[in-house]
Amino acid sequence: MVYDDTPRTLILPLKYADRTENAALLARYMAGAASGLIGPDCVLVPVPLHRLRLFSRRYNQAALLARALGRLTGAAVIIDGLERPRATRPLEGLGRAARHARMHGAVGVRAYRQAAIQGRHMIVVDDVMTTGATLAACTRALLAAGAGRVDVLAAARACGQHEQQ
Image (cartoon, rainbow, N blue to C red; front, side):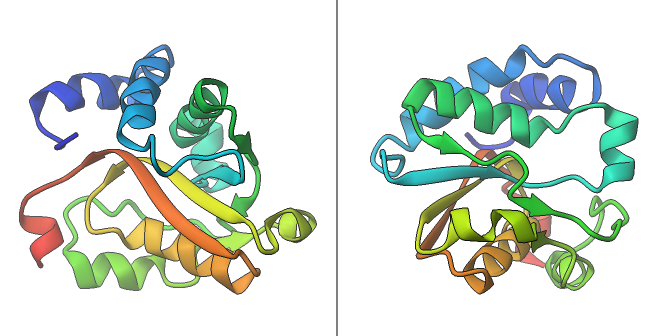
């Protein structure tokens, strides 16, 4: 979906207002959009939150989306495959170059999940893709850990000034 008024009414409450039930509806849209992408050989992995942000939010909206997608499609899900070993400030308001710079080295693969990733088709799941900086950081980490293929799937794509900067 294009990240405009309607998707915002589902994603922002999911992300910030404990409306976790919105994950199931968004996952249905995502499963339809990715019907040719998600297969029995792939593994879904959510974009991770740093532990401090996870503690304050109490849940990871990308993990909720990945779980719901796994239930709908039968794909395997590794909720804790990726980690954010260091906190990053929010990316809102930054252009493409600044977002990519801030995310450099901010995501890694958990050591005990590396064997489960080796040679596999991984799909990184997130709620919104703006410039792709976070998804690119996740992709780099998975490829460095030996993933055979990495695709990304987001509920919505922001179309505006940030991805053009």
